Structure formats: C-alpha cells, structure tokens
Image (tube, rainbow, N blue to C red; front, side, top):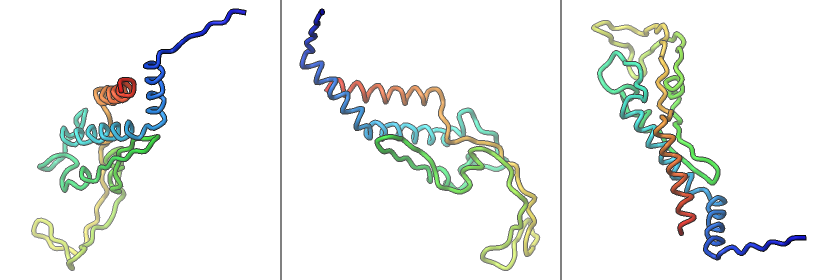
Length: 160
C-alpha cells in the first residue's frame, strides 16, 4: 500500500479556516447584498425604470407622486437571506400591472366632492388598467455588482 502525506502550510490552513468561518457566518455578506439590492431598487425609481417604464398622463416622476412607495422600500438580512421590499398595499399592482375593479369614490372629510366646477356626493369610477412598472427588478449590471460583493467578501476572508 502506498501512503502519501501532504503537509499543508499554516497560512493555507488558517486561510481555509477563515473561509469556512465566513461561510458559516454569512450575515455580513447578506447585509452587504441587501444594501446592493436596495441601491438597485432606488436606482429604478431615480431612472423611472430600467428599462424605462411606460409614461403617465401627469407631471412628475413615475410612481413618485407622493413619494410614499419609494420611501417604503426597506432592506433586511439574516444569515441565510438578503431581502428588499415594501409593505405598501398598492405596490403589487404597480410591480406586476393589472386592472382595478370599478368602485365608488366618496368624500372622506366633507359632504361632497368637487371636480372641474361640479359638486357631487360620489363618483362611479370605472376601474383602471395599470401597466407593470417593475421597481423590484435587477439589471445585468446589478447582478454583476452582487457577484462582485460576494467575491470581495470571500477574498477578504482569505486575505485576513
């Protein structure tokens, strides 16, 4: 029987131990990835989509009339995942597109509504078709940035 003994230098053994420790304790990596994801989503709002969202019939930035949707974007991370999202109810229809059902608009704080000089008790809204404007999306460059963040994390673990 042939016996082969390989002696691993201490520096290599220590580097591999650091790498194994970094792979077990991934929360710093996941936090960095969630920050990259957050930046990508904010860039989508800044550029009004990547690729550009369909235009709207009003003045102002798309999906940013009040700023509530963009301000609601939050990121989170733990040892196993990096997440970015929102809890705003109307976010889903803007992300995926869809049709709202017909509904009645009633005054909230007054007795009547005023539109273009007319005063009415309520308005029958026929519903709306809302095109998809995916703000929770990534470009190829975003994926490259995520890969770069992962590579940096692993390289730092080996270099320490």
